[in-house]
Amino acid sequence: MLRPGLIAIALIASLGPAVAADDGCEKFAWSLARQREAFAAPDKTTIAAGETLHALPTGALVIRLQPGVQASFAMPPERKPRIEQWHGGIVRLPAPPKAGIYQITLSDDAWIDVIQNGRYTRSVGSTGRGDCPGVRKSVRLDLDASPFVLQLSGVAPDTIAVTIGAVE
Image (cartoon, rainbow, N blue to C red; front, side, top):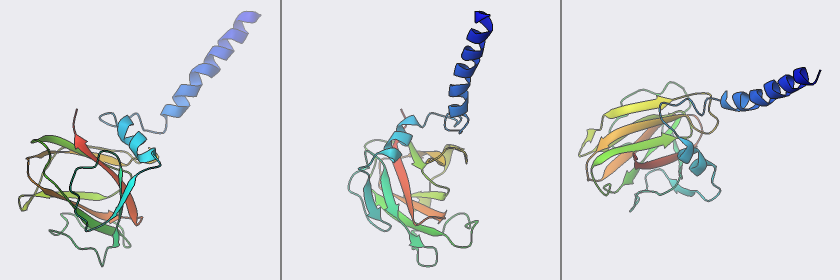
């Protein structure tokens, strides 16, 4: 009589983690646990689109975007926004400390263009999910050690959280 009760308890206990994992956050192509923590931190730096940073951010950065019709870009976005009412803008960033693969992770759906040395930088990998609260996509790019522009377009809300860092 005791054995079926223990089996039922074990089954219920095993369902708890499975339900938590069903939100998609553990199903990206690579781990975004550190980025999720940065997005959840209360002390994020906030800047306006168009600003220039003098150092790569160490945590999440919240960017206040412009309405699409007012947004200015370094180069035309490579893809037309999928929604009618959207926001966008750029942030100028300094040269990374060394050339290599860098990762840009976004809290919301957006198109990312990275411009370095007057041309679009091609991604070397990306992962995205619509079922992870607070994280939408992550893109990896091969950057050299020169300044670059992060350009965002097609964003529904007027702010977006971003992390930028070398791939470990």
